[in-house]
Image 1 (tube, rainbow, N blue to C red):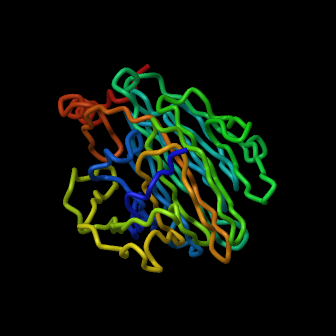
Image 2 (image 1 turned 90 degrees about the vertical axis):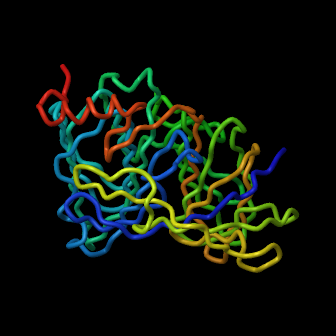
Length: 325
């Protein structure tokens, strides 16, 4: 087996989206080729309702898929196709925007005012950019969980892992989307197909993602508002890039390779990862997908392959022909 070394650790940074929702961005709105086919990951986690109740009013999407995973609170959604519904704790919505959709997402805290969830954007290949929009709404009870003898638990949202297959299917990027909990002090090896780009996002506890026998330096990058890479966002979305890398540690240091809450770990090539859980255990998303290796023309929530296609989409949005029959 070939262990995937850590390429970088990205620390998610505060940003504001929609009508003023305060969240953390792990990556997005920059050169996301290392994450291909994924474009963006936001962590919307807040205990103050005033920081999220304004939500994400009506806005367009084209050329991508959005994956919303709710851990606490609810998200009420509606769209231009007439769909309406609520996502509760543990639920998932996988939306294929395809040729175009207008929708809104309005978060509401739980009984204690807490809201927590993630939104991941996956790119669509050129052949499916103008496909018919569709939804896959999955209730928490329908997401299978596999538990190993050592107590490691894995919720399989999409893809197959440890004999369980997630309920989300027919996704262009053929992704694997897992929610993994590893008990305190446990060292775990987890398989990832060599043909896929892969990353982990830590949202509880801490740990180390590396093979202890092969020390390597790890860079940490901040994803923040100072970046100037890539385009200005539209429809209330602020553009974000990557600042120059900062060294997280040197080989043999006690901090290098460590990943704490709100850290994103980008892996290099190999067919498995190794995680060593800290004293409080660790919980993280493990996401992988086959790279599309296609050009990206990006303006806010619209992602096409060429500038001409992008300009056409923006023109249609302005003249009222964006939504297709």
